[in-house]
Image 1 (cartoon, chains in turn blue, yellow):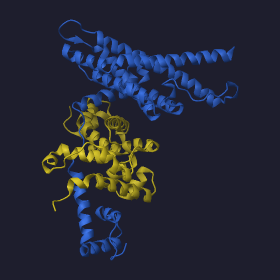
Image 2: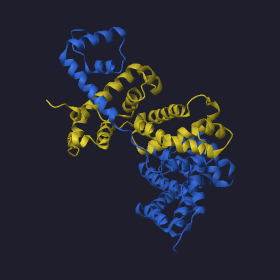
Image 3: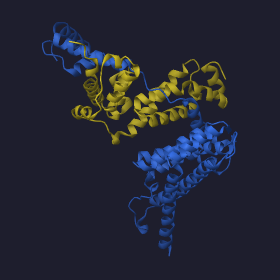
Image 4: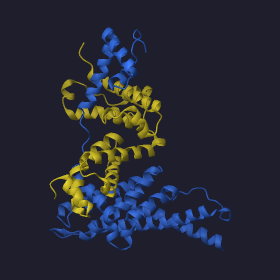
Length: 260
Length: 189
């Protein structure tokens, strides 16, 4: 850049953000004073930036504070609750599961597997990885079964008029949220869009239920039911669950045939 | 519910989950707005909010009580957004400046009349559309430079890029933003 040459668009960006060195800055200033063309170009850049500044940031959905807490709370306090499923959402479990799932990849979620290494040539590391994969298949299967139970109970709850007690479903949903989130993120990061989408729909329902009061009106319950039904959520969760079960069976069959 | 953040932080440090809940309820929407700007989609923004508060909870002991909790949380949220974006580096889906023009030709025609743009939602829509044309890295670099006021050197360190690469990400982002938005800000001849 010299005083006589026009300022390039990129020079104007540096000038706009004050990212030029002192000498370059002085040259840019003096060129802008002298050159109408560059001044006009700089004014266009400033107008675009002002336009960008005038756009409000995208707001969180209504009631986000409530749902944010519903998602977060199980991950903060799971260890004190006891029971098998609370261990699935404990920070220690989630950290272990995150590491393991990311290592193994979410291919197993959709029933797709990485190329098999002949058992005889497996290293200790590969064998350990397969064990972890098996454990996580079981965990994911359990997670989907428990999620299905919550959905079924919600769909069939409170046929009578009046308020409905969903405290049990609410507690279960709360326990499932953190693990579901982890499975969904894994599916997303490994490009399993279909599974990620099912888990996302599931998570939204779980979060809403977890954030609900223990007793809801018929209208509120109907709204949750409509969400479950409109997305065919129960059906989709069953499909993914069945894929996981098939994968587990294939694993067992493979181990049995190798052992015999 | 504690009246101030400082009081809530002090209680939360002692294991009072209701106090931490108060902090989440006070700050989650602001963290969401930042995360949405950085990541460009609601799902990622929600994940960033979750990670931000989890990290904040685990690091409450390190929080200086004289500092501003919102500012501290904001920094954590920026870092969580960057972590997410760096993890997606290989899945870039943005468009080159050369095809941005083509993209816009396929969009529904938009009337950029001043009356329409008077509405902040219309402005927001156009800016959102323009930013959706950026790659994850361009978006992050642009947001950090433009909205967060970070220097190019700081951005390159945060994003794990060489200074020149960070600079060029910003150049490309600004070029795309200008291409997309100049029609809306042109003055009358």
